[in-house]
Image (cartoon, rainbow, N blue to C red; front, side):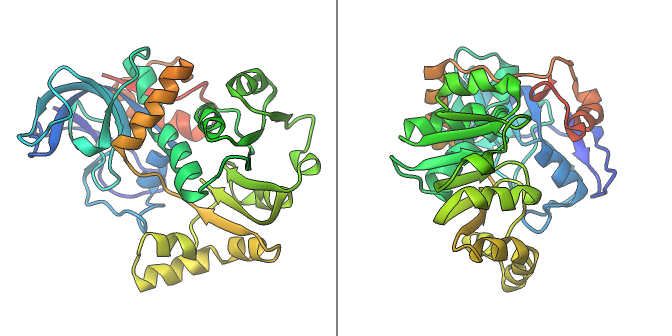
Length: 333
C-alpha cells in the first residue's frame, strides 16, 4: 500500500510517498481503509520537529493525525466494530499514520462517524472536536453558569467549541471575522466581536475562562478580560511547567518546559490568573459525545474545495501553512 512518510525532521521538510506493507490488526485493533484524511497545522509541527519533546517519532514515520474510512477487518478481541462500519478517529499520538491507504487503530480511539457527513467532512471533525471537548471538560473544568471567551473562534474550532460550551451551560463570547458572526450566533454564541470593528479586550471584563487559538502575542489582551483566578488555556502559545507535570515528563523536560513557558506563566501570575497549555489526545468515548453534538446540530465542517490526492500531500501541507485555506484541507483516497 502507499503511505506518505517523514524521513527526517527539517524546517523545510517534505513527505515521501512510499510503498509499505499492509498492516495487520492486533487483538484490540481494527483495520481501516482510509477514505479521507485531514491535514492540520499539527502535521507541520511534527514534520519540523517542533513537538519532538512532547512526542518523538522513529523515522521513517507515516504521517497524518485524523481520518475517516471503512473497517475492513477486526482483531480477535474487538467487540465495538465490525467490517463495513464507517468510522472516524483522531489517531493516538504515539501511533499516527492517517496519510496511508490502510491503518490499524486501537478500537478505544475510534467512533462511528456521523451519518449525515461524507468521508471528507467526517475527517475534519475528530481533532478539532476532541480539542474543544477536552479543553472545556478536562483542562478548564468549566461549570454551568461560567463564561468562556474564544478569541479567533469564528473558524472550525469555534464551530464545535460553541455548541459544546452551550451544552455545558456556559455563556460564550467569540471574536472573529465578519463572515463568521451569523454562524457563531446560530450555534449559540451569546456575544460576537468583529475584530475589524471592535477590540474585544476593551469590551469584556471578568470572564471565567479564555481559550486561546491565536498564540502568545494575544495573551496580554486575553488576560485583560479574565477575572482574578481565571484561566487562559492556549492551544498555540506553548507548553509550560504545569503541562510537563500533567504529562509526567522527566525532570529535565519539566525544567526545559518551565524555562520555555516562564514568560507566559509570569504574565498570568502577575495578575493572579492562570495559564495552561493543552495537546489533544485520542479518545473514542469522548468522540462519541462529539458525534452526538455534531449529529444533533447537523453540523457540516467547511472543507477546502481544492481536491488533493495522496501524491499531492506536500501541496496540501503548503496550503495549510499559508494560513488561507477555505476550510479543512483533505486528502481523498
